[in-house]
Image 1 (cartoon, rainbow, N blue to C red):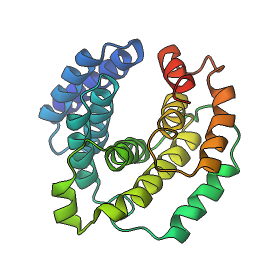
Image 2: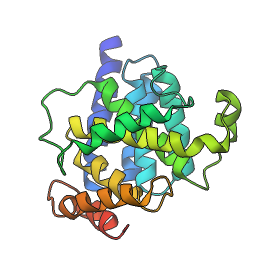
Image 3: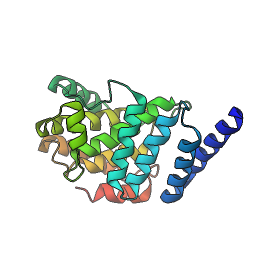
Length: 221
């Protein structure tokens, strides 16, 4: 029976990836929900939760997207991800790492750890959460002892961590999305936004990125 359940969850996950790739997001949500329902103790549950949140983000259901991002964060149970106050030194070190990268990620590696994939999506969703002026953050503030003055640096932390993982995982679409969200979030200074803008000129020319994401990224500036 265990083999049958694992086979069902894996099959649903593969179908979901295909549906996301072709833009059938609501079908992908159904498949990921099925995987989560049938694999409650599965080691890849954080990946399914985070990918479900990311999929909901793609079709504009942003509050639910953040909700699933938080569920995936708790399932991962990793201090690197929880919404803790981050120092300026930590965030500046991430920015220096990002500055050393090429404009586009290298080719996707053959083997990507599923936990690292889940982390990338969680970083993406929590970065959006702390950038957003509309997402309700009261529960996170109470649970993790945060103040509104902490949001800007937290948003930068999650944004940079997501880009680092997207780069090493060769995820061109997440890389593109992160560059498109930077200019209008109020999270970065003018000189930093200029750095994003310079990279975007090459990102939007890459056929490895979905056309709709390239358009959104181009017109974000």
